[in-house]
Length: 387
Image (cartoon, rainbow, N blue to C red; front, side, top):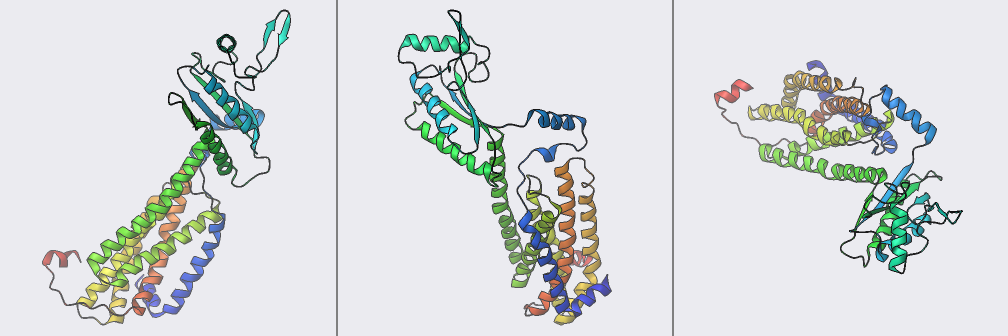
């Protein structure tokens, strides 16, 4: 390992080119990375129950459903029923809504003087108390309506939207969610305070997961970088010590996300922590090298010799550190749960590529940076011992 590190120190141009080639090669895969909000990654591969569910979906279909729920002391009142009708008709006009099930679309099948009445349950909003009482009786006495469009007590009703992405829109979930939210916002205007409206459904949950993943990716990784920046600035008080770990961390993150794209992995609630993980864990290797470099300078060693000594003394240590960490993450890879398996493989790759980028980049950057001003320090015995 010492010979390899010395060759890297003596070949800064080759090392830099190799880092650029590796990063660019893996960065191409970023274009194919997607955000995975499905729950399929949590299902055990090969589980008989999972296979059974897939067979059921293949036969009966897998309906994508949004439900808008109205809740009040009673839903048999003009303002609630009018909003149910308005929402039903507006939703039927949305692109991607295959059908709508509500009180305004279900048939009120009942016998009437020897004939079968097939009229829609809610054709018009009742204008009199007698008409409202008839509607309530028809609704709550029909078991077909209970738990589908109303509850047993008549305090809750739902408008269910069944979706079908016939045009295979890439951003279908987000687009249809925004359209439905606009309708919900519209019906809430001027609504009485005792009426509650809920928007539920797996597509909304998926969108919330996507938003949470985006939020974590945008905020957590920069926060990790900022924390590393502050710590390094306080301890080393030099620009190179701050710049190097952040630079190698960014290159490692780019390469790892690109690798995930090539492997067909998505960014899910588990793998979203990988960039932050690489920033924090990857910085330890840089800190180890920088600490040894500063120690050599404090002992009066000239710059190039200090870099060579740093590489020789710390190369094996950071290799073993990276190797044990990599093996630790690799133990997750055989997991039968796809989400955990992908995390183990991607995190292992990230640790490996971070080590490669670190040993190729740190000596080169230190050679380019001006030598920091350090003064000889007399260390206490405990510090000398741990060195």
